[in-house]
Image (cartoon, rainbow, N blue to C red; front, side):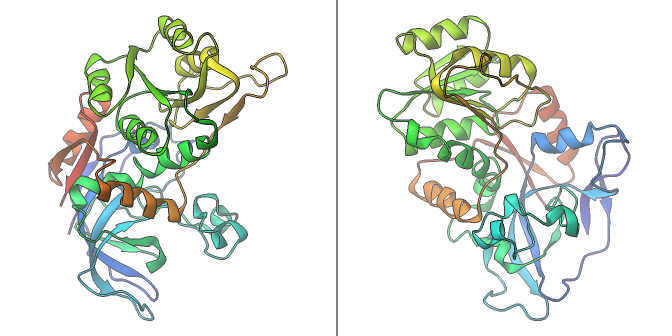
Length: 344
């Protein structure tokens, strides 16, 4: 079968022929229908050799959807031919966090060598993939896998981040989204769907600000120093109730820190290299800094239900598996509108 693999440190991913995998006991094989391209992939492929921990060769793709193709011994409750999405942050299934469906915070994944698909385990950018356990499959029903596969991360990650602040997003509150790209444009829609907050989008790209407005942002400003005063003007000087940073670089973190309100949240969603000082005199009183990771399995059901109602959709550009390296080039160049999806 064909697969897109990262094979050499510092090199571009390659489309190669590999052996079609067979499911072991308790595993499920999917015939992949769609796989999403993510900045996290670019991040891990940019790591120097001494920091890279994901193994080589690595079949990419931690956003996956497919049709159940073959069941390993002992698997019950699934039918061949069922259309499913893959819940990516796999855990042990037995620790306290996993018992709550919070496998993204599994206490033993590192110890046991459990890794998400595309981030250590073979991912979805292939004609077939192995899912370690049927509990990591969520039925898609009548949802189009190509249009919705990115919700497994680009929807689930902002949803989880926003739900952590949703109690503060009361009428009259302001939520700022920094970075209106693949995750950010979905985050804007989620904010509009589950909160009454006024949503402000910030980005350096005019076409991404246009996308932000198209998907529901009330205001869209360039992500520069002038944005601080614009946000404070919208709030009578108080500042933003919540700032969701989908970039995570030092300039965006510094910008967010200047506009968050007393008692507000600054939430680091993007996999960047920025950091913030946290001390009694460094932050507005009662403000919080959070760095959530991915989302809960139950929340993926909720995100897919939002898609079924039409409240959330992903702007997508579709590429064949052979053209998948071009998708990463466009991602690197910042020329994608929304999210790239690979269709084997």
